[in-house]
Length: 374
Image (cartoon, rainbow, N blue to C red; front, side, top):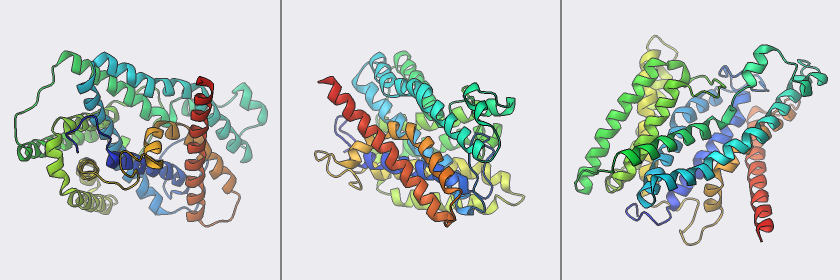
C-alpha cells in the first residue's frame, strides 16, 4: 500500500484525525492541570485539577506532535516526487500559508477578546481597556504571538526549506531490499534520536513550557524539524516502513514504557537523564509505531479508500479544525469555571464543544465556498 504514491491511505487519515483530537482534548485539559506550564496568555486555571492532564500535556507535546510533523514530512516527500519543488511550495502555501495569514487576522483577535472576557470576569481588567488595548506591558508581551498557530508557522517554514532542498539536491535512494531499507530506517531512527537529544540538551525548557513568540524558538524548531525530515525519509524508504510496521504494536508499547520511565525519574535527581533520553526516544518510537501501523492500511476511521466518509473529511479539514478550536475551548472553560462539575466532566465538555464547534465552522465555511463558487 505504501508503494503506490497516488493511492489514499485511510490509515494515515485515521492517524491524522486521532492526533488532531488528542491535541484538542489536551488543550481542553490545560485549565485543569495541577502544575500548568508557564503560559501567561492562557485565560483559565480551574483548580484543584488532576495530575493526569499534566502527563497528557507532555505526552502530546513530545509524542503526538512528533507524529504530526513526521506525517507532514512524509507527504511533503511524496508530493515532491510528483511535482516540481515550486509547485509543491505553491500548494503548501495555499494549504498552510494562506490559512496561517488569514487566521492571524481573524482567530487571534477572537482569542484576544476571549482572554479579555476571562480577565474581566476575575476583575483583572476593565471593559474600557479591551478595545483600547490598554494592558500591562507583560500582558501585551504574552499575548503578542501566534499562540497555537505556531504549528502552521513551523510547517510552512519546513515546507519551504524542503522545497529548496529538493531543488538543490536531487533525490537519492540506497538500492536495497525491503529488509535492507528497514535497517536503514533503524539507523535513521537512532541518528534522529541522537539529534533530538542534542536539541533537548541545548534548551531543555522547551519540552515543558511554551513561549508565545512569532520568532521560532531555535532548538524547539530544530527538534521538530528533525522529526519532519525523518518523516520525509520514511517515505523515501517506505518499503522498509512496511517491514517495520509489522511490529508497530511493539514500538507503541515500548514508547509507553519509555514515557512511564521518564515520568518515574522526573521528580528525582535523575530528572535530567529522563528528559535527555526519554523525550527523544519516546518521540522516535511514537513516530515509528503509529506511522508503521497506519502505513500498513488501518481502516480505523476512514473506511475503505473509495468510500471516504467522516474520517476522510476530518483528515482533510484538520488544519481548519486546529486553527479555530482554541477560542471555542477557552470560552467553554471560562463558562464552566463557575460551575461545580467534576473536573473530568469539564474536560470532556470543553474538548467536545471545541472539536464539534470547530468542525461545524469549517464545514459551514466549506459549504459557503461551494455555494458561492457556482
